[in-house]
Length: 243
Image 1 (tube, rainbow, N blue to C red):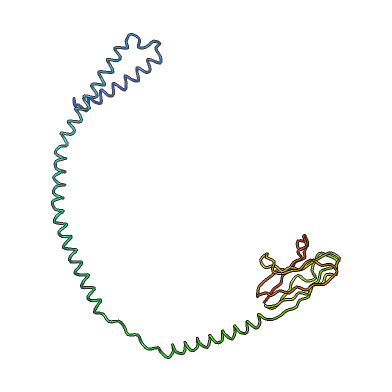
Image 2: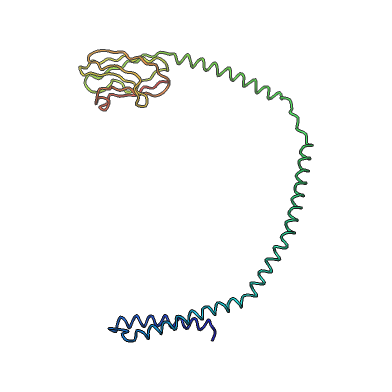
């Protein structure tokens, strides 16, 4: 019987003995009692046997594989021996690549740059057209500046019977915008110009009176409201379009 088989036998006996001992200890009261020394000897014998056969089995395994290890070492040494020749070949290959790179650089150095041709007539015409376009844009800018300086006067009034303006939409040209506001109601009202929720201009609330609001505005959309608390929410608001 081989050492491997004896190792597995001893290990199996130890496992079964442990299970039997555990089961007997749970079922039999006072177990093992006087048989305790015998139990110790039983387990000691099989533990020593399993250890001995494990060591012997390992030694046999190493002896059997020794030729394989020797062959593998020889192959490694042969590979290392041929590696030097491969490196030399790699060095020669590197020198060859350097020579090819030098040849390519020499060929590139001998190349001539393409001459830049004269400007064609069509290109000159396009340049002239662009110049004319620039003048036209300048003229348009001048006209826009004149439009930006325009002045617009708007009439706006408060409804005497409700919290509302008589208009909800106003329009003006970019530049100075004047709003003539009339409040015939005894309830105080005013006019405030807003852009994105930010106040640009306005005046204090008035009652049964008139007031004038002047402000410079660029093209865009604005909001006009009565800033007395609760009045804008009740409907005293509108849109002022400047274009």
